[in-house]
Length: 116
Length: 116
Image 1 (cartoon, each protein chain N blue to C red):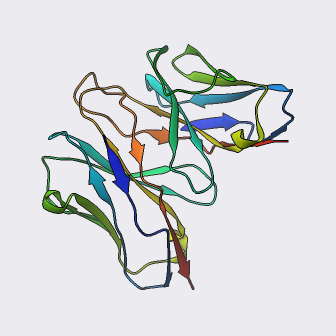
Image 2 (cartoon, chains in turn yellow, brown):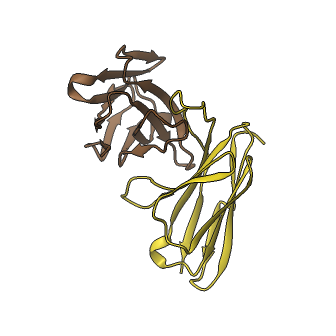
């Protein structure tokens, strides 16, 4: 595997279900991100992890819970979601250059989530 | 506050035509970074270019070229001799300079359709 992978690619869940999205990066990066992409809306940053610590939580509802067990893996745990949470969830990674300026982020293919 | 505007929601061109995608940004920082990403139908965002605010030289990469003009706060992207494989949604993004893992602020994207 190369780059950034995400599983599952598609997920349909009911509002009472609990599910998790998985992201894995094979690039040796030290920062990982979750983004939400809804129809006709800009990409919205949800969470940022740097060196396995959460550095940004962009006012995301608590029904979304991230977990970063190591620098290569990132999870998004989902519970009691709403239909408006249906979207494409994208994971990305980058190499933190230590204050020099942001490096480009590399994205996975996303998980298309439908909440019924 | 940072903001990225891509005024063109959708563009349709015939193969081999040249096309320019517009990007206008707002920031109060004097140092910042600009990016372009391509999102093909498969979903993942593909990094195309990163440019810092001190480098105003235009860049060319094959059929792709970028015109960065600080005076008009624009970072436009031109595809020369477009091909069907160029069909995708293109995103312009902006980032602050002081943290390596600073999140990107994305525009809403421009959907480009290249017709054979």
